[in-house]
Image (cartoon, helix red, strand yellow):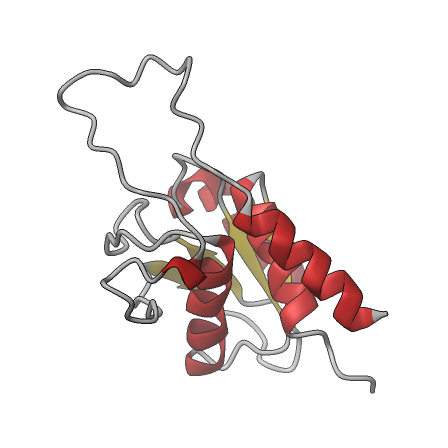
Length: 157
């Protein structure tokens, strides 16, 4: 059943396309970044690679699971500054805010799918000693969080 849910989620995420129509983004200053599934081989058949994401980590108790905030499309890690600071102060937890690829201070890449955004986090979280953690996402960040949860579920205690 888990494999079927994951396969369904992956098919759904591969169908997502950046909604250019009707957004008034035809100005010459707007650069279109192709949004395609990672399996499309965005760099001449090469497998997309995770990027070193920009983040802000608020210190807290390492014995408690950290809280990770993922912003929505066109957002950045700064969208969560107030809530991250309050949550860290009130709960004593470490709180991480992350700029997704092609957003904020993170590097840009033609590879932009939920699969690769999930992989970016799968690389970052262990590097920071934040796995396991609680992941909270808005819009695009929420979809990334759902896929991450399906790909890396919490092992039973």
